Image (cartoon, rainbow, N blue to C red):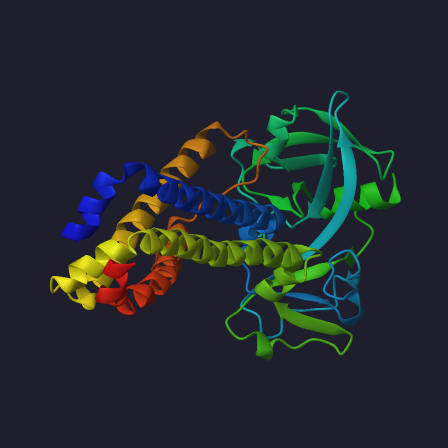
Length: 355
């Protein structure tokens, strides 16, 4: 460690460049992990808010909520600890000044998927909705009358809830009678028995009894089959993994070049009795210090960047995950250093000094 630290102090510029490369790679890895988590939450917030174990859909729905169409009496709760019906509609909401893509979820106001109200009040009358609070950032407010692209009827925002986005769009929660009004027009509110799914709670989904035309899937399976969800996560994850490889290769090249430049010095040290294992440990210790500094600076820059990002950027950091990625970056950096270690071990003192 003494030799490693002394060399870093005496060759600051060289090692600052190495730290800079590691800092940029770790910064990108941390930022991508936060972006992946943020985009993941955008797609699944409303589903996570249910705190449910499973969902019942039709067999022909391909696990898509809009393609599933059931009747309220298709499931009576056999085998479930608790269950509730869910209906949904997608539309473009307009308050006169702003437009936003939204999903409208019809829920029973006494069910476990009824959202908590953070501002305003719950819906009690026909045409009232509770909105995800991200709509406030887009210019929507309590009392706004919303026109919807899929109907001539209007709804009014009477309350806001938090963390309720689905497919990256805010959710409006309302009653079944209001959703029927939006679907079928005036005079039909409350008459339809059509729902899109049953949301269930229960530890043993395999014991849920449904007709052959229906299927029971876990909440995680439902989420993973959301359009684009898995592909998006896989793309960002592969980018992070490639960055690990790039980090190892770049650092290996840097250290190898530095080692080649010091072959004669290592040859003299070996001729004086310094063992190859001591020199190898010095390189490993040096790599550890450089990678630790690069990862820490990258983490600090990521946190500073997150402070100045606009709220519209979907980013969410999980510190345990960032810690794991930091350790992996340091580990692959150490692996890259073994090329230099092999070079040091093969140095012949006489040839090195003579060269």
